[in-house]
Amino acid sequence: MQRHPSTSRRRLVGAVTFAALVLAACGGGDDSAPSTTRLPLGPDSTETESTEPPATTTAPTTAAPTTAAPASSSSTSTTTTLPPIPRQPLVGIPLAEGEEPIDRPALAVKIDNASPARRNHSGLAVADIVYEEIVEGSITRFAAVFHSRGSEVVGPIRSGRSQDVDMLTSLDQPLLAWSGGNPGVEALIANSTLVDLNWQAGGQGYYRGSGSIPHNLYNSTERLWAQTPPDHPGAPPEQFPYLRPGNEFAGTPVDGFDLAMRGIDVDWDWDPESGRFLRSQQGAPHVDVQHGRIGAHNVVVLGVQYKPSTIDARSPEAQTIGFGPLWVFADGEVIHGVWIRESADQPWQFFDENDNPIGLRPGNTWVELAERQPTATETNPGIELSIAFAE
Image 1 (cartoon, rainbow, N blue to C red):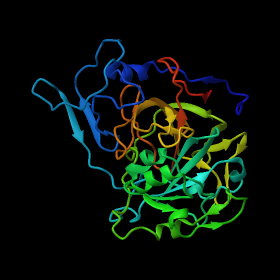
Image 2 (cartoon, rainbow, N blue to C red):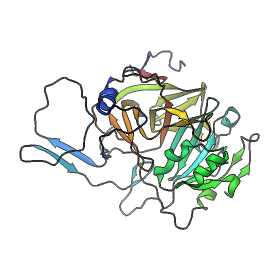
Image 3 (cartoon, rainbow, N blue to C red):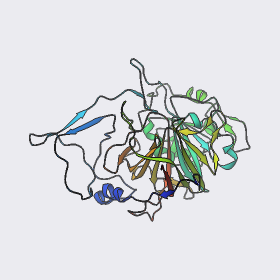
Image 4 (cartoon, rainbow, N blue to C red):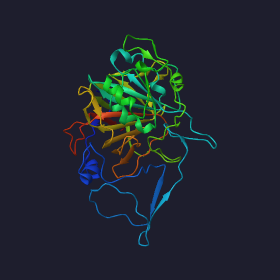
């Protein structure tokens, strides 16, 4: 993939710090969370000030960070808890005084990314969060999560997978719009905390539109939100930590990056004019027919293992509970680090190579669930990611 022939792209393979922060400390892998509990100390929640001189050792960190201990008479370090900033939860935009988060649930819509569906993509450009997951046949599928904005047309809508339950549970009873699935997946979702709006099991508002069957099922976010149960808890919790006002995303400047998602080649190119990374796939710009060019203020690449689903061994299942390597792209820069998620009902935690929490900039976020090969090592994270660093 040569999207930037004038810029030298080098493959980012250095993951020694990932091993130091997590593997060496915990003796684990991507299958389970580290044994040391980390609180979600995102940039929106705490600050630490210290008057102690910096350590003089140059040895790498070999233990996972722990939560801050209470200050004692022999310590000059203090931890200041900052008040949380009220935000629209899935885009991190601070609320004005007296403003409340939009009182409706998160709505996750499974959107087809097979070749016949791509020219009719609708709604992806205005989703708050989009998860791209690998499914069988070496293609990908999207879980587009809406809350702050909606789309009159959303689709083409396709089936769910077992991996959707762990991936979406932390949204606190999100509505799930999907076309159905095999009996095992349907039973799994019906028994989860997801609000099941299965087209084949009573979900309303679905219709056939542009494209050929099965790549032509659509709905509207308003019609889907209208099916919210009366006792629903309302707005979802934040899924990611966000930068506090006045703080900047401090990474390494990049022009963009390429990512192989099995059979789908994905390119993200930094566009200073719009302040977003713009998405292409299979060598062509990715366009939403309702809302225009698809881009994101934040692009998060999570290195995850895929294992055969226990429901259908032909279906890959992303392991989104545990930990793994991480790249966060925002404001034309990248930060490399580690993701941690302790359970399906918990949000994501992001840490850089120095164990500092990573905050996203307010705006929409795309999450690439990139496949981490079983042969991954400390020096090779096993992900086909190529970054164009800015000159």
